[in-house]
Length: 107
Image (cartoon, rainbow, N blue to C red):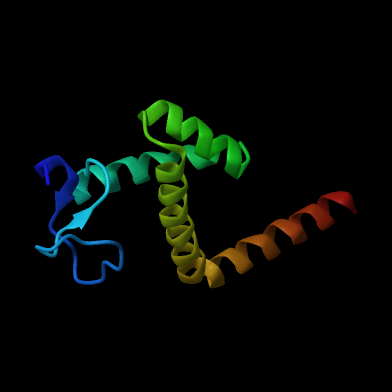
């Protein structure tokens, strides 16, 4: 099998492997390149587009397949869940403060 179609697998990889234990299917990028691409999508989500529009735009901008863009979106969703769980207490306090400010201004 050509080198461009395999790479070393991480310990938690569950996808298809060849006889040498390397993951297969398509040209693979190093994890650092994949993570950089996912970080760009993470920053882009503040643009206000829907999830589907973000994924399709990400696929076009990065010149990747739509399925790869959806995989990147899954990683971004995990990061969002982590962020929310870490900042939940602060977020509730900020929302309450905003709500009380709005009520006071209305009165």
